[in-house]
Length: 326
Figure: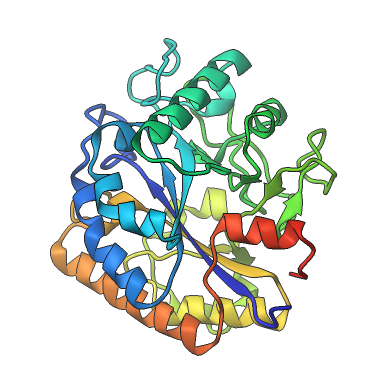
């Protein structure tokens, strides 16, 4: 049994600047910049989970850059769906100046999109695909059932404690409300996402904690104006970096995870945040260098504190084989 929490690092690998609602070019400049990140994770023995979006799988150099890491089990490949860039398309998917939630499309279209995404990755490299994350964090019962019947064993779409109902997609219907969902990994109940059940698909949410649980929170963070995220996040802190977030904030989060005997600390980021001017947060090379300095600090701290880096697939199989994670 591991006496320390595991560390899971996940990245949504996607086209440039998907926050820009008028951007339908799906540029892939950020993908070539990931070689630097690959070298850093290998240096620190970090095993990332790369959730791959359709355009990245179809058109980018990602699999050329990461081929050896994939073959040598230094990372995991998962699936990441953006319904506006993943064929086939409906009018709703292509609606201008918006990004639709995948929960706004019907089940048959979702299944077709999922199978297209899975197949385009399989065409690039022979790899088991068992992990999934929805674009814009929106998923429902029917879609989880489709995933489960098509080989997915791990989902990472639910954001515990976060209510997306005041955030809109292509219709006037808001996103999902995950306020009462468990904060730790759990096998899903497909009749109620708030409950633990017996369905063989494991929900592995990103680590999100309350500000009060982070020692010296306001000394450790000075991010983009909180007013911009307040309606969504309220008093929550995500396990991720913003430009002015200090690495010590996540170290304090790790201390909280360890103190409370939680099974893992799960960090997330978007690939476009690792390249200058392909996202709304990091505009210059100096911004990117500062981000990498924080990665160096965080990864060094992870290793110093003996938090083993594993993938979601690793975590699933350890849990399923009753090797004792809790």
